Image (cartoon, rainbow, N blue to C red; front, side):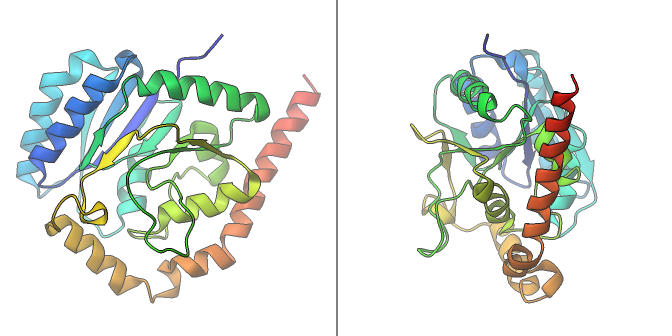
Length: 262
């Protein structure tokens, strides 16, 4: 029997009311099992505009979904750890999906398809330590890089194996998605669901929207900190990712030993 998973959609938002409402409406229209989807929105405590439009969106759609919550926090430069990992710590789903407020869901009944694919993948990996890669329209930032999931989805078991985070906590902004790929791909633990375009990203990355203040700030943080070894993506891939892969495989072996004793 195919398990219907609970999905936790993790979405920081700032000063994008039109994009935000387009995002929520698209999830509403494209989701079959709405009772299995929760939204967690991160809003900066100094951002009165976002608090208002998130509250409006929750009031309009909450009755249709498992849950919708706005979580307010002080503004920081650490997008991945202080927003996505922070939201994931408060989520209740089986699958955590890193998303953005400038996305639009484009595939009808996306959750039915993902349910089937993940259930099938779990036959190969009963420990459930996997990453799910779902197709979107964002090109890789360099022709030298492979097509990796810009909006990765991780299982609860993967989060535990990583040390209770879903995006590499030392990476401030861009690059954490590629680190996720570098952790899971060599272990053949990325489930590629690329049969159709699931997400439309309205961004300067895809040449479908102009650069806004949020884009500018994220880029400025990235450029300012990328030369600092503690935050550098390439250094993390070379020096820290192999250790993280080892931690994942330790969890796998613990699971396998437990299975033997059942």
